[in-house]
Length: 130
Image (cartoon, rainbow, N blue to C red):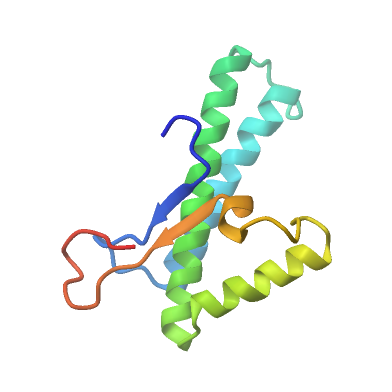
């Protein structure tokens, strides 16, 4: 995925996630990310025994874990409360434009750099579909 403009987060299809399990996983992953960020700064008094490149790689991996957990939580809540994720993404896009985080002329997903994959309802245990 070299120089890709998109990061795709799959909807996990080998689990039965619920709001509580997703929330706990998100907190766990966010904590691991914060621990790495703090370690680099020496915030907890630890000596950073890791070089910058290794730290950056571990930080990216933890950020992706946290992002996956957040996407899974959003998917679970949308299903549970019958929200349309596409409509919510449009609202999110409007909010980003209002806050001037997103240029009006850019394609939303290109600017955001995130896509999501939804399970096929016909065959939940098969491959993921866009």
